[in-house]
Length: 179
View 1 (cartoon, rainbow, N blue to C red):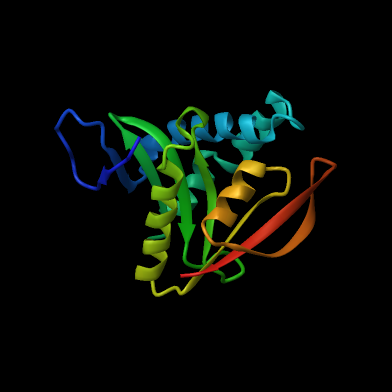
View 2 (cartoon, rainbow, N blue to C red):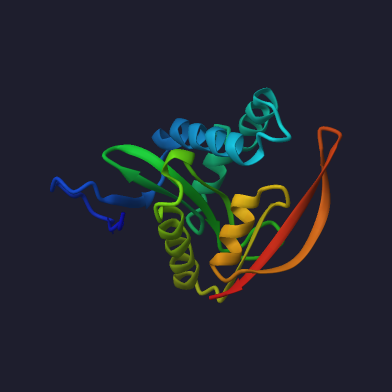
């Protein structure tokens, strides 16, 4: 299937993907995609309760509002016929001052259809327009879906580190890409 997208409203019968900035009304759908995607990518070592806890911690209204309330940042959603299919948060400067893509997931049923690529390219364009020449993105080492996607998009693994969440060690991979 070949996807095309429009950033404006579309009324034809072709189910275009619309890319737009998220609003507060999108937060429940973003959390749903976050849960389903983490369940697929991380389900082999985290149970549903652990995933729900992660989503509640990192996707609550305060966190998401904190991202979109800064006009330099954006959360982009990919939507078809009013349904959120995926999202990506983009920060020209993270807390370390680096340009970063984070919280990037596509609903498992919609993966491998080009939606992630559309969101990734939209995020890269947003960073370029913000005057940024490169980006950083990270994923858990055990997330083979994310790891392979970032490599496919031309990101280079620059380092890894161990992070401890709820008493568990997790390998985190950090990728870099020049824009």
